Image (cartoon, rainbow, N blue to C red; front, side, top):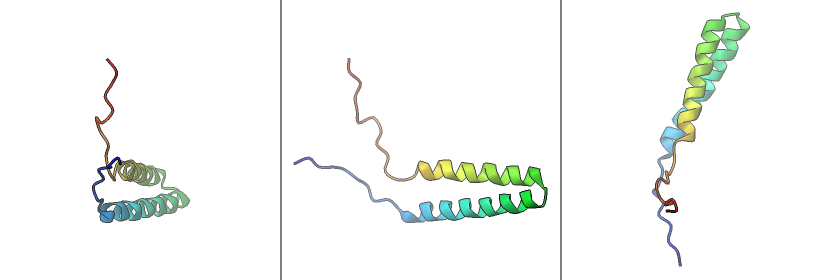
Length: 69
């Protein structure tokens, strides 16, 4: 029987990042509707940054697959 090592993940950072993404998205939409394109672009970039961080949360599997010699 193979055993998988999984570390428990803390759901708090994921939830916080999801809330931040939602907040930045609504900020971007509101700023775009008002014609504040610089502000909208800034909020979009912040949302994308949070999405990238969200994708990197969770268990990480690094250097478990060794390259063939």
